[in-house]
Length: 82
Image (cartoon, rainbow, N blue to C red):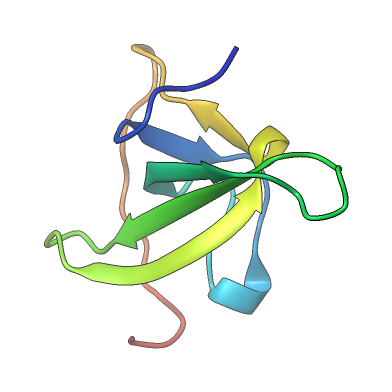
C-alpha cells in the first residue's frame, strides 16, 4: 500500500551516510521512479526536534513505514550538527 504524501514516516533501517537511524521520523515528499525499472524511491525531508530541516534524502519505498498509534516519538543527539 502506497503511503500518502506529506505524512510522517519512520525509517526501517540505519542510513549512516546521512547520520540517520532506524526509527527516525521524516516527512514523505514525493515518489520517484527507479531509472532502471527497479524499486520506486521516496524523497524524504528530515527535521530536528525544533522543526528545522536537516536533510533531504531519497530511499527505497521498502525502507520506510507508516507511524502507528502504539509508538512513541523519542529524541537522540546527532553525531554531527548540520
